[in-house]
Image (cartoon, rainbow, N blue to C red; front, side, top):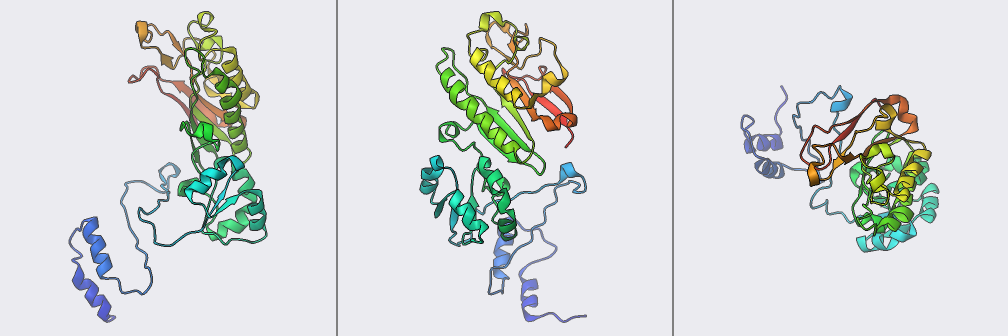
Length: 320
């Protein structure tokens, strides 16, 4: 049997292996029994009750420590010109795009963190061989890719969240309402609809896209109960419907209509005049997918029986 070292004996005297300690108590003990002259690491085991052999139960993630590590980091913000001022205010040490991409391609890596926006990830793909081995490649899980579309006038309203998975992007979106008096229709038609479509097209250049949410438009007459009386009302104007036409024309699939072409299927009802009880509604909530995923799509559903809101849930089943 090997003999216990002096430090090992001290460690064993500091805690009882048969006792359960709180995190606060355990943290204090760990500090007391650390004899290294460097910053040692800690292994933390958590029993989650999942089977990691099953793909849908694998858990991966990254978090930032609340007080950091004490190290001063040099940050590079890769962004478009309209985001440079925001990056400067956030404290980035280097700000730019194409010039820094060229420097990195030539071997420059004198930074600790690189942050960017999702729309620029396709440009950064070729930097993977340089940045990947050094742990510098921007990643949504580590917070180095922001949850917006990279345009301040839209992002200030917090309407988009993007998650990157190994084989696809999942985007949730709450499209701006054009308002009862169509006050925001011009913004919706000439700015938001164009910019959001360009955003998902850029994402699709690297991997398929699934996006979902309240798109605030009934695409066809079949998608609302009273189309004739709503032709110039928000959510059914020609301009808004054309915006959704553009989404479909670029190859994205309206998953519900992929299976179902019947009327009286709605996702939103006014609280007035017992509209839900009479099923006088609109279909304005969608799941849309890249065309390349069409063969993977199994089911697309609306769940009007689920209460709790003036909207009801929509869902899809897809094999990826």
